Length: 81
Image (cartoon, rainbow, N blue to C red; front, top):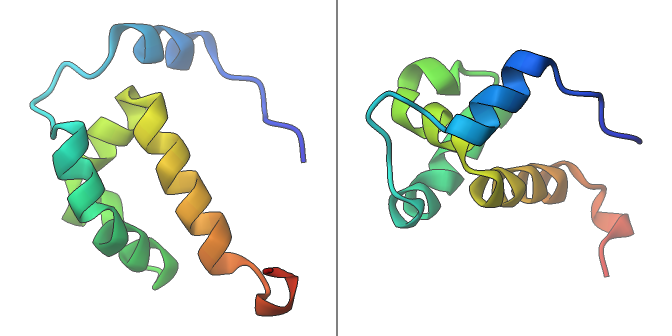
């Protein structure tokens, strides 16, 4: 599935990074499991962990980790090695 094109505002935000207080990458990594569990449970993870959401918006490396974890947890167990 191809990625959707980003809006100009999103591209600028990705370049500039978050302006609000944020977590470090190490802190993000420590909290990533809990954040993804909230998302997959249908909870408003961004509202419950706003610093995490801000970090994921501004950090492509952590966003990639997030996306990979979500994909892994949503995968059919039969498709895993």
